[in-house]
Length: 195
View 1 (tube, rainbow, N blue to C red):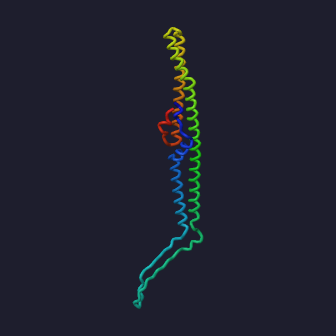
View 2: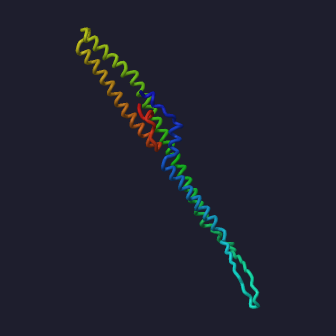
View 3: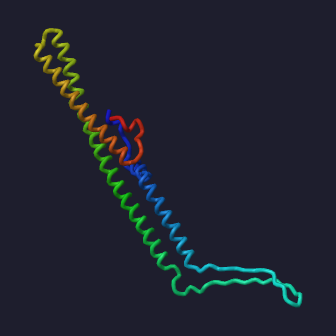
């Protein structure tokens, strides 16, 4: 029955946070952070170290060590840093949008599936079970001659109509369960996929 189809909204929202598009957006953020770190490192002028042995004309020898660094007072890679910061903000905003859209999509799919599950349980309880009981009673009554064939056929038609209504709602439920799986980016467990 539909009562076995319980999965919490929190569980599917947590699963949706691991959607492939969100993982890709997170990777873009990490790449943008790495690019920003590189651009920030490039703002410091490179230090050049040199060294060697030196022979004097009088035969003395010595070690020479030197270091040089451009002053770079003007540029300091501000343009590269600004571009990298903008790319990082853009990647973070893109991920936030994807996250909010995904959460909204999951909520809608979960609510639809839950509503259909409840409707299915009610339909089975209020229509299918009573019509099956009526058909069994009608068969016994017909066999004992207490009911006409037309009355038996009416009971059978009521049961068939109830089965069709349940089957139609089960089909809608399965589509809703699929939509929820698609929204979360992961399959539901076998117990939650069945109405």
